[in-house]
Image 1 (cartoon, helix red, strand yellow):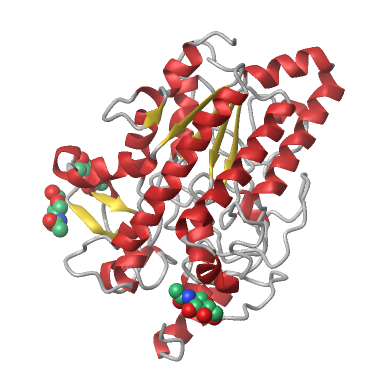
Image 2 (cartoon, rainbow, N blue to C red):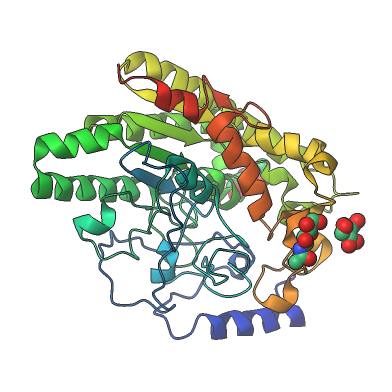
Length: 410
Ligand SMILES: *[C@@H]1O[C@H](CO)[C@@H](O)[C@H](O)[C@H]1NC(C)=O
Ligand SMILES: *[C@@H]1O[C@H](CO)[C@@H](O)[C@H](O)[C@H]1NC(C)=O
Ligand SMILES: *[C@@H]1O[C@H](CO)[C@@H](O)[C@H](O)[C@H]1NC(C)=O
C-alpha cells in the first residue's frame, strides 16, 4: 500500500474532515483507511437512546407493507456492513455510510448508513414479510413501541471474532449484538408479560449475516500470525462453532426461526481485484476458496444444529452461490459492468473507497458492485428474492424462507 503517496495524504485529509470532530482514536496502521468495513478499538455495549446523532435523524421510511398482514410479528437482524442500516452512524468509526453518494437510489434518496446505493437485502425481505423497514438499534428511541416489529443490530466492521476489525474506531461485535437482542427481549417481557413476549419472540424471524470481516480484517491480514496457527479449514471450524453457540443462546431466549446468510465472493470484490492485480477482472481464487469453505462449514453446522434443536427452523443461504449465478449470467440479469465498482478510485475502482458523489458512476443499476466491497441495490434485490422464494436460483438449505415460514412450529 503506497502510504506515502500524495493521493494517500489527500485522502487522509479528506477523511479527517469528513469525520469531523469525533472522539476517534487515530489508527495505528494507516493501511486500514482503505477498508470501509473497518472498526472498533474498543467496543462498549451501547444502549439507545443516544444523543449523538449527527446525520439528520431520518429513520428508515416505512413503505406500505406489500401484504395485508405481516407473515411474522417481527424481524430481527444481526450482522456486519452487509446489513447495517445505520448503527455505525452513532459510533466513532471510519466504517460509516452516512454521506452521499450512499443512499442516492434509496427510497429517501438520502444516506442512511446502508452500505449501498439503495436497499440492502433485509429491506427487500421486510417487504416480503409485510413489515416496515426495520429500524437500527441505536437509531430508534428504545421504547417497546419502536422495537415491536423488529430491530436491526448490525454494525459495519463487526466479525464473529471479537477483535476482527478492531483497528479503526468502534463497532458492535457479534457477541455484543446478541447481548443487545437479549436486552430487547427483557424489555418485551417486562412490558407485555412472559407469555405474550415469548410468543412474539418464537414467531419472529432472525437474520444473521456476518463473517466477511473475519477474513478482510483478520485472516487475510494474518493478525496474530493466524495463518500459521490455523489453516483456513480449522479457522472456519472455529468460526462455525462460535456462530453455533450464539444461535443456541438465541434459542435459549426462545428464538425459533433463523436465517443464516453465507458469505459473498469477496475474491471478486473490486478491492481485491485491485490489490491482487487481477488480470481481466478474474476473481482471486485463493480468497474465494476460503469463502466457499466457510459457507460449507456453516451449512454443515446448521444441518447438525437442526438435529439438535428439532423444534427450531433454521436455514442457511449461500450468498456465494447466488452471487456466482449473477456473475456467470450477468447479461441475462442486465449487468454489463461486473468488475468495476460504481463508486471509488483506481483500477477496478477498488483502490480508494467511495467518499464523494464525484467518485460515483451515473447509473449503478448495470453494475454488480457499488463500492470496493459492497454490491449494488440491484444485486441485493436478486439475492433477497432467492432467499425468499429461490426466484432465480436455489441458494437456501434445506429450504427457502417462504417454505420455512409455511411450516408449522413443531
Ligand atoms: C503470518 O505471520 C507470521 C508471523 O509474523 C509469519 O511467520 C507467517 O509466515 C505469516 N503467514 C503468512 C502466510 O504470511
Ligand atoms: C453498459 O451499458 C450502458 C447502457 O446500456 C452503456 O452506457 C455502458 O457504456 C455499458 N458499459 C460497458 C462497460 O459496456
Ligand atoms: C439505468 O440503467 C438501467 C438499465 O440499463 C435503465 O433501465 C435505467 O433507466 C437507467 N437509469 C437512469 C437514471 O439512467
